[in-house]
Amino acid sequence: MITDYILKMPHTVYAGEHALENISNIMKDAKKVAVFSDQGIIGAGLLTYPLELMKNSGVETVVLDNLPAEPTCDQAQEIIDRFKLIKADLIVAIGGGSVMDIAKLSSILATDKYGVRDLLENPLLGEKCIKTLMIPTTAGTGSEATANSIVAVPEKELKVGIVNPAMIADYVILDSRMIKKLPRKIAAATGVDALAHAIECFTSKKSNPFSDTFALEALDMIFHNIEEACDNPDAMEAKKAMLIASFYAGVAITASGTTAVHALSYPLGGKYHIPHGVSNAMMLVPVMKFNEVACSEKFALAYDRIVKTEKTEKTEKTTKSLEEKSAWIINKLDEIVKHLNIPTSLKDYGIGSEDLEILVTAGMGVQRLLANNMREVTAEDARKLYLEIM
Image 1 (tube, rainbow, N blue to C red):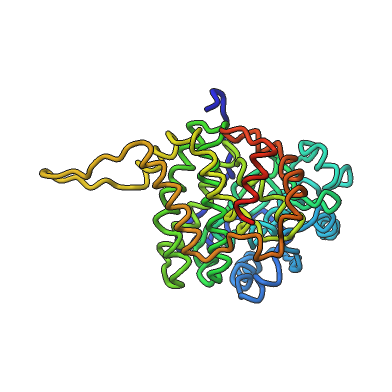
Image 2: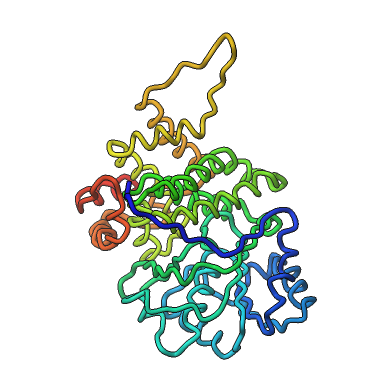
């Protein structure tokens, strides 16, 4: 655990049953709003009510509605170039991680001084030019809370995280109505993404009292709600919990950082276009088993938080050993991934042993995240971890 740490969060967060209604308060100083979204959000009817609230506030709205999923750096730049022409004074992102990531980049690139590719080399070049409102439509990426934007770099066949504190949102709205109709497949993948954020940040070398507070609460909420939230379309309490937990896990990223799960999953998305949540689900259990020798005490602390020991005047459940608690956490992670029917084999995507060395080279290149892992990951370790999911 590091000894010096900092917590950076969105300026204002609205949550609860009527959180969307706060749009009118946020719009009061805006004249022209750029709304970032995608065709899936529009098709699901999720843009209708927020747009109505904006228009009722008297602001002019321009919608960028064809944002790509898991964009390349050049696709992100194309959207940003279109955004610049709008001359908006507020950005509203309504969507999942990709939508919010492009919107956040736009907030620091409303200038011709530099572009997305410049930020790949020096992320801190970007300065906040325009305020942002994030309205997530998945409970998983936590992008609404982070200073991160993920883009694919085609020539490297790798996803890269651009990290700049200026991208932290000014406003966030967490309204469970926005995730009520989320398809189970997407809810599962994004939910496990949040789970990975929480457990990785809690076991990161950069973990600290700030990140642990949010990561542990996120873990507790996700362990108890993810299956119900994905299985039952009407489980609104579970969905509310997942939306808050995803935000908490995002805050934990900002205070700490993800580790080898995300590092080794980036090539799976960058080269083979496996959805981000699915690639994290594939790597989650193998990496946590690998890390157990260095993280068993942390896993045991997570167990103590998640498993509510029953006590009565006459009896108390037998106390488990540290090793048993640690094993329980890893087994439960495995059970969750399997219950949610997320693919766990690269064979499902046509990836075989002939791709192994490409993956190892690319994965080992993500030293920004591998450096956070409590147990050192060598190239041979990475090779074995990839082989486990082949």
